[in-house]
Length: 303
Image (cartoon, rainbow, N blue to C red):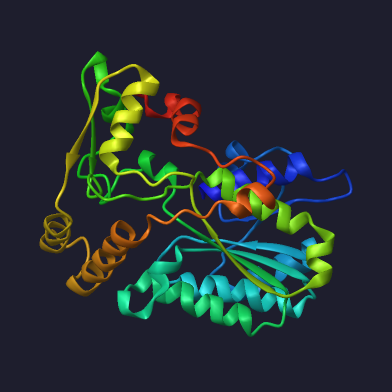
């Protein structure tokens, strides 16, 4: 994923020559196109405990980063990694989790439940760990799907053919402290490479957010200013989008309800700001939206 790619780049740039960086990937050819050339790739499937255990034996990894896509197999995949790490003598695990408010049982979200179960397994592993509870990613602005709207392509935001760009979102009027995945990766890399942190052991949890809480209407205004193009924000109704997914058979009603609960929590509870770990542990200034928009402007252009 985006955070894993950013982490590999951070590790390669920060580590000395004696440190080897491994990536456990499903598709080696695809990974080679997006990861630094000096990342050693091991092919396998996180759902297969034998594959995971073999990767640890091959790499002799002692410091481990865990991240996987949200879904029905997430708990199995990440607990496979935790078990293999423990069994092979790993001394430090850094796990990417979701925002703290979305972990609450009362949110009734499958995503939050999965991360709760994985964090519990991590705590029972006896391996020193750090959990990064990251907020909504700035990079999500580039992703098609439910949060942005039907038929979305990033180029629509920049305005194709010089026209007015449109940012469609369920968060038009709700503030979210979005964080750049590169900031999360900087924190993760620092934790993985810090010998003192590893030696001290312990169990630590960090909230990681961006430096500003903005509505998507404010995001659209920032896009206009940074890019010098007109961008407007179109508010979408979350429940209507969820009902459409159910009616078209994309997902059953319970799954849609669970997803809706999670997205509602993001809009209502993820406006808090906590950037201390980015500046102090990641050793960098938290990325502001304007910087992200400048760096990723090309990604919003038509293909």
